[in-house]
Image (tube, rainbow, N blue to C red; front, side, top):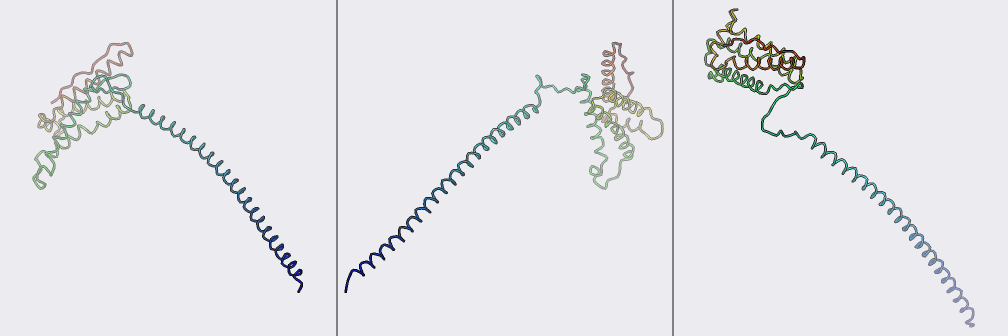
Length: 234
């Protein structure tokens, strides 16, 4: 048998196989190069995105630092200024210092509160008998404070005219208490309470406020001031 045809057939088969392998190898290399190129593009995109994120983070950090500085400035601005001494004074816009008078009125309010406590059911043992004059005393004790809201409103508004009107109203009330002959026992009530709730200190404080207001207004108008007439208290 002639071996030549077999050799030719074998060579042809090897050539076909080699060609197929070569084609597959080239395709694999092509896919590898394409994948590498795609990976490079992806890396570049990610680097660009990372650069943009870094730039945005730097901008946000700068804005945050600016906000923190502004916050600290606002906190410093909101801190109360410390006076040179330890005294506390109340000033209305016109420069009227009535801190001492206001302290006296606070003391009066505290005295009234202490005078009211013994009339409560708690102090009387819950079921104890009501003091004989309790209903009258309680009425007039509360009555001498119920107009203090006008004083507070005037101070909060910084209105000297409203402050003067509130003081005059309170003074009128306090003057009427010891002179009341209407039968509602205000005179008798404050006679009984003259040791625990004297009306003279708050009355003097109110007259002092009115006197300072008159002095201030007279100085502003360039005229001599007239102090309010002294009132008689229990």
